[in-house]
Length: 334
Length: 277
Ligand SMILES: Nc1ncnc2c1ncn2[C@@H]1O[C@H](COP(=O)(O)OP(=O)(O)OP(=O)(O)O)[C@@H](O)[C@H]1O
Ligand SMILES: [Mg+2]
Image (cartoon, rainbow over all chains, first blue to last red; front, side, top):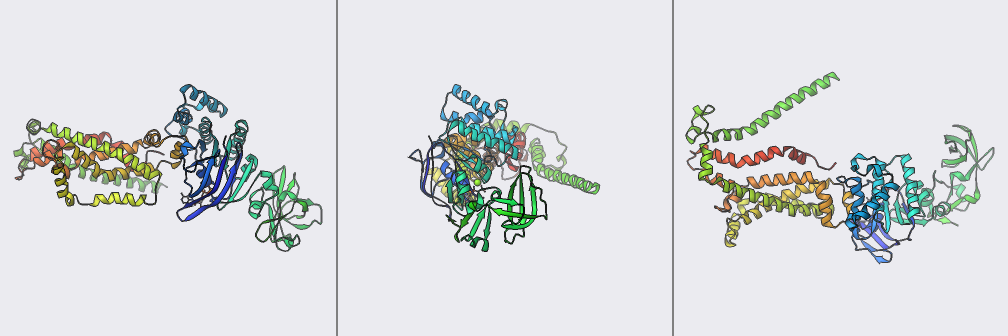
């Protein structure tokens, strides 16, 4: 079990309020991802849930039990830190055993769980090493191992993969997602990488300046961004946001169209322009198009390898059914 | 390239020479004291015996047989050891709280602690003697231990605080998430990680306790008197017994110099950079 509920939670550091009143429920077994730009309060929110920071006001409950005043060690949550935070003076085995030893588990039970964790995380050969003798990826596995052995109500991850190289990151991303599918434990995962958010989450919480901009499933956010911020934040490459007369044509202050929803047509599309940078990925081609008569540079995603290069003329047609419209306040118009 | 290497080499040589000169300058009084301690009181003041003299152990024999050196030494050990242990017992939790759960006034508290070191000891001489005497604590180990601990506590807390600050906060927080109590945290995580820093703090505190002379001389007569008191007692007003005084002084600083020698690596490491990296 692990249903986490935040009611009117606020957090101030001195005079500055970093989290204005905030309400959020994370259901039992859910994989929730907090995303947002740097400094928006993701870590602070996670640390409030963990109990590592005190709330300024409001309540946090886990499984219906008020935990606002409960110390982190008694909340039954496990956390994986960005910097791994392994105990440098203990071997991998002792690191993993530590929370179980604190919980007073028998030696036999500890050993059983250590072996199970070590096998699932490929750590069997490293159990007697110290953290300093491990690679970044291995250290991260140990940190995860230390979290899983104690069977927590929920896992909290604070950008656990941001210190790893790209290839390792993709591998670990899949491992954590599989771990969630296997165990079904609630997980809260903080990241500023929206690809991680899209691929891992059941539920994405988009934050800006401590305020929840939108909560929803990845596809929900992709298809129906509630406002300009979410529209620009979710999706890669970013949605094209166009203002001015082109937007007025659609009765909006701003219109948004995703790069994958603009078709490259042979001649005379809605917009014509010059190819600036062409990024050929093989499976896709990204074009950055200038001189379309719009002030904004358009990003276009064409499927497959399209043989256009720098300086060529390109004709484009947006799929009107995929167009997003926003009002002067940046809110979505239905 | 060659020129750069050359100049840095001369730089290194001259720096080493300078370091040696300074070190010898500092060492000379100790050397002279030890040398004098092997002279008779009569020889000690005669210029012709400056270097060339007949060494004698007379002063040392005299000291152990007639001046009860071992009792003073035992008192020094007891008071310094216990004062250091108590200072650590108070200082570790204190520095832990300030390093990992700082409040808005932590910096001020630290400054205030240090400011107590600026109080001239003589200013509280009368109340202190009066209090200890009327409480019946005069010339007891207890009062010496308490006083030594209190006067060193600011330094101990400051040093420990700086060492603890170097431990990444996340490691302490990971401990909390792993369900460890505050005492468990200190025992299982903090002390093992800051071991080098704690050891050098303890060593320094011990040295300060051992060398302390203002209060140990004034608050004792015989029962709790330390080596400082022994030296003070041999300071004859006529200034004649240099041999004897040197022997007593050498025997008083001897143990601490030996201790410092054995622990110098630890000390230097502890005083220059943190143990956790
Ligand atoms: N201990 C603190 N004291 C004062 N301000 C703090 C403290 N911790 C965080 N803040 C402020 O709170 C805001 C949110 O910080 P937080 O670390 O939660 O951001 P974040 O979303 O995790 O950013 P990042 O993606 O860079 O990790 C920031 O403006 C930060 O400056
Ligand atoms: Mg953060």
